[in-house]
Image (cartoon, rainbow, N blue to C red; front, side, top):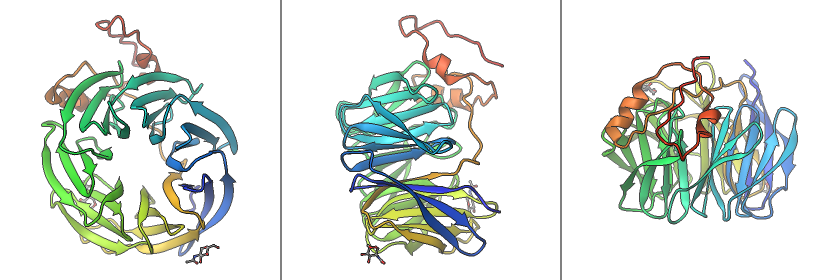
Length: 357
Ligand SMILES: *[C@@H]1O[C@H](CO)[C@@H](O)[C@H](O)[C@H]1NC(C)=O
Ligand SMILES: *[C@@H]1O[C@H](CO)[C@@H](O)[C@H](O)[C@H]1NC(C)=O
Protein backbone atom coordinates (compact mmCIF):
# COMPACT_ATOMS: atom_id res chain seq x y z
CA UNK A 1 0.00 0.00 0.00
CA UNK A 2 1.25 3.48 -0.79
CA UNK A 3 2.29 5.64 2.12
CA UNK A 4 2.83 9.37 2.41
CA UNK A 5 6.49 9.58 3.09
CA UNK A 6 9.12 12.26 2.95
CA UNK A 7 12.81 12.02 3.77
CA UNK A 8 14.34 15.15 5.23
CA UNK A 9 18.09 15.45 5.61
CA UNK A 10 20.35 18.20 6.90
CA UNK A 11 23.87 18.86 5.64
CA UNK A 12 27.15 20.56 6.41
CA UNK A 13 26.34 22.82 3.47
CA UNK A 14 23.53 24.55 5.48
CA UNK A 15 20.85 23.13 3.21
CA UNK A 16 17.88 20.99 4.21
CA UNK A 17 16.68 18.53 1.55
CA UNK A 18 13.22 17.06 1.28
CA UNK A 19 12.47 14.02 -0.89
CA UNK A 20 9.00 12.66 -1.52
CA UNK A 21 9.08 8.89 -1.71
CA UNK A 22 6.96 6.84 -4.05
CA UNK A 23 6.51 3.43 -2.48
CA UNK A 24 5.97 1.18 -5.47
CA UNK A 25 5.97 -2.50 -4.75
CA UNK A 26 9.50 -3.39 -5.79
CA UNK A 27 11.36 -0.15 -6.08
CA UNK A 28 10.98 3.04 -4.13
CA UNK A 29 11.87 6.31 -5.78
CA UNK A 30 12.77 9.51 -3.96
CA UNK A 31 11.94 12.66 -5.87
CA UNK A 32 13.38 16.04 -4.85
CA UNK A 33 10.56 18.00 -3.23
CA UNK A 34 12.24 20.98 -1.62
CA UNK A 35 15.57 22.44 -0.61
CA UNK A 36 15.71 25.07 2.10
CA UNK A 37 18.66 27.24 2.80
CA UNK A 38 17.20 28.58 6.03
CA UNK A 39 20.29 28.12 8.19
CA UNK A 40 23.52 30.08 8.12
CA UNK A 41 25.70 27.25 9.44
CA UNK A 42 25.81 23.48 9.24
CA UNK A 43 22.75 21.55 10.31
CA UNK A 44 23.12 19.43 13.41
CA UNK A 45 19.72 17.93 14.22
CA UNK A 46 16.36 17.13 12.64
CA UNK A 47 13.05 15.71 13.84
CA UNK A 48 9.56 15.15 12.48
CA UNK A 49 6.06 15.02 13.96
CA UNK A 50 2.66 14.42 12.34
CA UNK A 51 2.75 17.89 10.84
CA UNK A 52 6.08 19.58 11.36
CA UNK A 53 9.71 19.05 10.57
CA UNK A 54 12.29 20.93 12.62
CA UNK A 55 15.99 21.39 12.00
CA UNK A 56 18.63 22.70 14.37
CA UNK A 57 21.96 24.20 13.45
CA UNK A 58 25.28 25.57 14.56
CA UNK A 59 23.68 28.93 13.79
CA UNK A 60 21.82 28.49 17.13
CA UNK A 61 18.35 28.50 15.58
CA UNK A 62 15.65 25.91 15.12
CA UNK A 63 13.77 26.22 11.83
CA UNK A 64 10.20 25.00 11.42
CA UNK A 65 8.56 23.57 8.34
CA UNK A 66 4.85 22.97 8.16
CA UNK A 67 4.70 19.84 6.04
CA UNK A 68 0.92 19.93 5.62
CA UNK A 69 0.77 23.51 4.40
CA UNK A 70 4.16 23.09 2.80
CA UNK A 71 5.61 26.37 4.04
CA UNK A 72 8.44 27.52 6.24
CA UNK A 73 6.94 28.29 9.59
CA UNK A 74 9.57 30.52 11.18
CA UNK A 75 12.41 30.01 13.63
CA UNK A 76 12.68 29.27 17.34
CA UNK A 77 15.27 31.49 18.93
CA UNK A 78 16.22 30.65 22.47
CA UNK A 79 19.43 28.67 22.53
CA UNK A 80 22.75 30.36 22.76
CA UNK A 81 24.86 27.74 21.04
CA UNK A 82 24.61 24.88 18.56
CA UNK A 83 21.37 22.91 18.68
CA UNK A 84 22.50 19.37 19.42
CA UNK A 85 19.24 17.43 19.71
CA UNK A 86 15.56 17.72 18.85
CA UNK A 87 12.74 15.35 19.72
CA UNK A 88 8.99 15.63 19.40
CA UNK A 89 6.70 14.22 22.00
CA UNK A 90 3.54 13.23 20.12
CA UNK A 91 1.94 16.19 18.41
CA UNK A 92 1.96 18.54 21.40
CA UNK A 93 5.54 19.20 22.38
CA UNK A 94 9.04 19.56 21.04
CA UNK A 95 12.14 19.21 23.19
CA UNK A 96 15.45 20.77 22.22
CA UNK A 97 18.93 20.58 23.68
CA UNK A 98 21.95 22.71 22.97
CA UNK A 99 25.59 23.43 23.61
CA UNK A 100 24.42 26.14 26.02
CA UNK A 101 23.46 23.33 28.42
CA UNK A 102 19.75 24.13 28.08
CA UNK A 103 16.93 21.71 27.61
CA UNK A 104 13.82 23.46 26.32
CA UNK A 105 10.25 22.29 26.10
CA UNK A 106 8.19 23.94 23.35
CA UNK A 107 4.48 23.89 22.75
CA UNK A 108 3.77 23.04 19.13
CA UNK A 109 0.54 25.05 19.18
CA UNK A 110 1.94 28.53 19.58
CA UNK A 111 5.59 27.53 19.52
CA UNK A 112 6.22 29.06 22.91
CA UNK A 113 9.09 27.93 25.07
CA UNK A 114 7.23 26.47 28.06
CA UNK A 115 10.30 25.48 30.01
CA UNK A 116 13.95 26.32 29.74
CA UNK A 117 15.99 24.13 32.03
CA UNK A 118 19.69 24.50 32.73
CA UNK A 119 20.18 20.78 32.30
CA UNK A 120 23.95 20.24 32.16
CA UNK A 121 27.08 22.07 33.16
CA UNK A 122 28.54 21.53 29.71
CA UNK A 123 26.63 20.83 26.51
CA UNK A 124 23.45 18.84 26.31
CA UNK A 125 24.43 16.13 23.83
CA UNK A 126 21.24 14.06 23.60
CA UNK A 127 17.80 13.69 25.10
CA UNK A 128 14.97 11.18 24.97
CA UNK A 129 11.38 11.40 26.17
CA UNK A 130 9.85 8.33 27.83
CA UNK A 131 6.91 6.95 25.80
CA UNK A 132 4.59 7.98 28.65
CA UNK A 133 5.68 11.61 28.27
CA UNK A 134 6.28 11.86 32.00
CA UNK A 135 10.02 12.02 32.06
CA UNK A 136 12.98 12.70 29.82
CA UNK A 137 16.57 11.60 29.98
CA UNK A 138 19.49 13.76 28.97
CA UNK A 139 23.22 13.33 28.70
CA UNK A 140 25.84 16.03 28.48
CA UNK A 141 29.51 16.86 28.57
CA UNK A 142 29.51 16.93 32.38
CA UNK A 143 29.60 13.11 32.50
CA UNK A 144 26.11 12.84 33.90
CA UNK A 145 22.89 11.16 32.90
CA UNK A 146 19.96 13.20 34.16
CA UNK A 147 16.33 12.32 34.54
CA UNK A 148 13.76 15.10 34.24
CA UNK A 149 10.27 15.13 35.54
CA UNK A 150 8.53 16.85 32.64
CA UNK A 151 5.51 17.66 34.76
CA UNK A 152 7.35 20.15 36.92
CA UNK A 153 10.56 20.58 34.95
CA UNK A 154 12.71 19.46 37.84
CA UNK A 155 15.57 17.08 38.03
CA UNK A 156 14.39 13.69 39.31
CA UNK A 157 17.82 12.20 39.66
CA UNK A 158 21.36 12.43 38.45
CA UNK A 159 23.70 9.59 37.67
CA UNK A 160 27.39 10.05 37.24
CA UNK A 161 28.77 8.08 34.34
CA UNK A 162 32.41 7.47 33.55
CA UNK A 163 32.50 9.08 30.13
CA UNK A 164 30.79 11.85 28.27
CA UNK A 165 27.91 10.16 26.54
CA UNK A 166 26.59 11.50 23.26
CA UNK A 167 23.37 9.54 22.73
CA UNK A 168 20.59 8.48 25.08
CA UNK A 169 17.45 6.63 23.91
CA UNK A 170 14.46 4.89 25.48
CA UNK A 171 13.32 1.59 24.05
CA UNK A 172 9.87 1.88 22.42
CA UNK A 173 8.15 0.21 25.40
CA UNK A 174 10.05 2.37 27.88
CA UNK A 175 11.34 -0.56 29.93
CA UNK A 176 14.99 0.16 29.26
CA UNK A 177 17.24 2.79 27.79
CA UNK A 178 20.63 2.89 26.16
CA UNK A 179 23.44 5.36 26.67
CA UNK A 180 26.12 5.64 24.00
CA UNK A 181 29.62 6.86 24.78
CA UNK A 182 32.17 6.72 21.99
CA UNK A 183 31.96 3.15 20.59
CA UNK A 184 29.97 1.63 23.46
CA UNK A 185 26.25 1.05 23.90
CA UNK A 186 25.36 0.65 27.57
CA UNK A 187 21.97 -0.92 28.14
CA UNK A 188 20.21 0.22 31.32
CA UNK A 189 17.32 -1.35 33.11
CA UNK A 190 14.67 1.20 34.08
CA UNK A 191 13.98 -0.26 37.50
CA UNK A 192 17.53 -0.57 38.76
CA UNK A 193 18.97 2.29 36.71
CA UNK A 194 22.09 0.20 36.29
CA UNK A 195 23.90 -1.16 33.26
CA UNK A 196 22.75 -4.66 32.38
CA UNK A 197 24.97 -5.11 29.35
CA UNK A 198 27.44 -3.32 27.09
CA UNK A 199 27.90 -3.76 23.38
CA UNK A 200 30.99 -2.40 21.63
CA UNK A 201 30.87 -1.23 18.03
CA UNK A 202 34.11 -1.38 16.02
CA UNK A 203 33.95 2.40 15.46
CA UNK A 204 32.63 5.46 17.24
CA UNK A 205 28.84 5.43 17.08
CA UNK A 206 27.05 8.27 15.30
CA UNK A 207 23.41 7.23 15.43
CA UNK A 208 21.14 4.50 16.77
CA UNK A 209 17.52 3.49 16.30
CA UNK A 210 15.36 0.90 18.05
CA UNK A 211 13.62 -1.25 15.41
CA UNK A 212 11.55 -2.97 18.07
CA UNK A 213 11.99 -3.48 21.81
CA UNK A 214 14.86 -5.88 21.36
CA UNK A 215 16.61 -4.82 18.15
CA UNK A 216 18.81 -1.75 17.91
CA UNK A 217 20.33 -0.46 14.66
CA UNK A 218 23.77 1.06 15.21
CA UNK A 219 25.62 3.28 12.73
CA UNK A 220 29.08 4.68 13.20
CA UNK A 221 32.24 6.00 11.66
CA UNK A 222 32.33 3.34 9.01
CA UNK A 223 30.11 2.25 6.12
CA UNK A 224 28.50 -0.66 7.99
CA UNK A 225 25.19 -0.64 9.84
CA UNK A 226 24.90 -3.27 12.54
CA UNK A 227 21.86 -4.60 14.33
CA UNK A 228 22.24 -5.53 17.95
CA UNK A 229 19.90 -7.80 19.86
CA UNK A 230 19.16 -6.95 23.47
CA UNK A 231 19.44 -10.00 25.67
CA UNK A 232 22.05 -11.52 23.41
CA UNK A 233 24.15 -8.36 23.57
CA UNK A 234 25.68 -9.01 20.23
CA UNK A 235 25.32 -7.96 16.64
CA UNK A 236 22.99 -10.38 14.88
CA UNK A 237 23.14 -8.76 11.45
CA UNK A 238 25.32 -6.29 9.60
CA UNK A 239 25.49 -4.87 6.10
CA UNK A 240 27.48 -2.35 4.11
CA UNK A 241 25.18 0.60 3.71
CA UNK A 242 27.38 3.33 2.23
CA UNK A 243 30.77 4.19 0.76
CA UNK A 244 31.82 6.31 3.72
CA UNK A 245 30.67 6.75 7.29
CA UNK A 246 27.01 6.64 8.11
CA UNK A 247 25.83 9.74 9.94
CA UNK A 248 22.21 8.98 10.70
CA UNK A 249 19.84 6.05 10.84
CA UNK A 250 16.07 6.08 11.20
CA UNK A 251 13.33 3.52 10.68
CA UNK A 252 9.59 3.00 10.40
CA UNK A 253 7.24 0.08 9.94
CA UNK A 254 5.29 -0.88 6.87
CA UNK A 255 2.64 -3.60 7.15
CA UNK A 256 4.91 -6.60 7.30
CA UNK A 257 8.43 -5.28 7.29
CA UNK A 258 10.63 -2.58 8.69
CA UNK A 259 12.28 0.14 6.62
CA UNK A 260 15.68 1.39 7.68
CA UNK A 261 16.74 4.77 6.34
CA UNK A 262 20.41 5.69 6.35
CA UNK A 263 22.17 8.94 5.50
CA UNK A 264 25.87 9.28 4.92
CA UNK A 265 28.75 11.60 4.33
CA UNK A 266 28.83 10.11 0.81
CA UNK A 267 25.71 12.16 -0.01
CA UNK A 268 23.28 9.29 -0.27
CA UNK A 269 20.07 8.61 1.58
CA UNK A 270 19.14 4.94 1.27
CA UNK A 271 16.05 2.99 2.18
CA UNK A 272 16.37 -0.64 3.21
CA UNK A 273 13.77 -3.32 3.58
CA UNK A 274 14.26 -5.54 6.61
CA UNK A 275 11.99 -8.41 7.60
CA UNK A 276 11.86 -8.63 11.37
CA UNK A 277 11.96 -12.35 11.91
CA UNK A 278 13.82 -14.69 14.22
CA UNK A 279 16.85 -15.15 11.98
CA UNK A 280 17.59 -11.69 10.62
CA UNK A 281 18.82 -11.52 7.06
CA UNK A 282 20.66 -8.47 5.73
CA UNK A 283 18.17 -5.96 4.33
CA UNK A 284 17.63 -5.32 0.63
CA UNK A 285 17.89 -1.87 -0.93
CA UNK A 286 14.49 -0.37 -1.73
CA UNK A 287 15.72 2.90 -3.16
CA UNK A 288 18.36 5.60 -2.86
CA UNK A 289 19.04 9.19 -3.74
CA UNK A 290 22.25 11.15 -4.21
CA UNK A 291 21.80 14.52 -2.49
CA UNK A 292 25.38 15.51 -3.45
CA UNK A 293 25.78 17.12 -0.01
CA UNK A 294 27.59 15.88 3.07
CA UNK A 295 24.67 14.78 5.16
CA UNK A 296 24.65 15.19 8.93
CA UNK A 297 21.17 14.29 10.13
CA UNK A 298 17.92 12.75 9.02
CA UNK A 299 14.22 12.71 9.83
CA UNK A 300 11.43 10.70 8.24
CA UNK A 301 8.10 12.46 7.93
CA UNK A 302 5.40 9.80 7.82
CA UNK A 303 2.18 11.45 8.98
CA UNK A 304 0.06 8.31 9.11
CA UNK A 305 1.73 7.17 12.33
CA UNK A 306 -0.71 7.39 15.22
CA UNK A 307 -0.25 10.40 17.49
CA UNK A 308 0.64 9.70 21.07
CA UNK A 309 -1.20 11.23 23.95
CA UNK A 310 0.25 12.31 27.25
CA UNK A 311 -0.88 10.31 30.22
CA UNK A 312 -1.29 10.97 33.90
CA UNK A 313 1.38 13.20 35.39
CA UNK A 314 4.08 11.52 37.41
CA UNK A 315 4.46 11.97 41.11
CA UNK A 316 7.77 13.41 42.17
CA UNK A 317 9.74 10.26 41.86
CA UNK A 318 13.24 10.69 43.18
CA UNK A 319 14.55 7.15 43.02
CA UNK A 320 14.62 4.85 40.07
CA UNK A 321 12.29 2.38 41.85
CA UNK A 322 9.70 5.09 42.44
CA UNK A 323 10.05 6.17 38.88
CA UNK A 324 9.62 2.63 37.57
CA UNK A 325 6.48 2.31 39.69
CA UNK A 326 5.14 5.63 38.38
CA UNK A 327 5.80 4.70 34.79
CA UNK A 328 4.17 1.31 35.09
CA UNK A 329 0.83 3.00 35.81
CA UNK A 330 -0.28 3.10 32.24
CA UNK A 331 -3.75 4.49 32.51
CA UNK A 332 -5.27 6.11 29.51
CA UNK A 333 -6.11 9.34 31.19
CA UNK A 334 -5.89 12.17 28.77
CA UNK A 335 -4.31 15.20 30.27
CA UNK A 336 -2.81 17.82 28.09
CA UNK A 337 0.83 17.92 29.07
CA UNK A 338 0.90 21.59 28.31
CA UNK A 339 -1.43 22.53 31.16
CA UNK A 340 0.49 20.40 33.55
CA UNK A 341 3.84 21.77 32.57
CA UNK A 342 2.60 25.27 33.11
CA UNK A 343 1.87 24.56 36.77
CA UNK A 344 3.40 27.14 39.04
CA UNK A 345 6.70 25.87 40.30
CA UNK A 346 6.57 28.07 43.39
CA UNK A 347 3.71 25.96 44.77
CA UNK A 348 5.28 22.57 44.37
CA UNK A 349 3.04 20.39 46.52
CA UNK A 350 -0.25 21.20 44.78
CA UNK A 351 -0.81 18.58 42.15
CA UNK A 352 -3.69 19.31 39.84
CA UNK A 353 -5.85 16.39 38.87
CA UNK A 354 -7.90 17.65 36.03
CA UNK A 355 -7.69 14.77 33.67
CA UNK A 356 -10.13 12.16 32.49
CA UNK A 357 -11.61 14.13 29.66
C1 LIG B 1 11.93 -7.96 17.53
O1 LIG B 1 12.03 -8.60 16.26
C2 LIG B 1 12.65 -9.87 16.26
C3 LIG B 1 12.70 -10.34 14.84
O2 LIG B 1 13.95 -10.38 14.36
C4 LIG B 1 11.89 -10.84 17.11
O3 LIG B 1 12.54 -12.10 17.16
C5 LIG B 1 11.76 -10.27 18.50
O4 LIG B 1 10.95 -11.13 19.29
C6 LIG B 1 11.17 -8.87 18.48
N1 LIG B 1 11.24 -8.35 19.82
C7 LIG B 1 10.19 -7.85 20.45
C8 LIG B 1 10.42 -7.44 21.85
O5 LIG B 1 9.12 -7.72 19.91
C1 LIG C 1 26.55 12.01 -6.61
O1 LIG C 1 26.40 13.28 -7.23
C2 LIG C 1 27.62 14.02 -7.32
C3 LIG C 1 27.32 15.39 -7.88
O2 LIG C 1 26.51 15.33 -9.02
C4 LIG C 1 28.61 13.28 -8.19
O3 LIG C 1 29.83 13.97 -8.27
C5 LIG C 1 28.85 11.90 -7.60
O4 LIG C 1 29.68 11.13 -8.46
C6 LIG C 1 27.53 11.17 -7.41
N1 LIG C 1 27.81 9.91 -6.75
C7 LIG C 1 27.55 8.76 -7.31
C8 LIG C 1 28.02 7.56 -6.56
O5 LIG C 1 26.97 8.63 -8.37
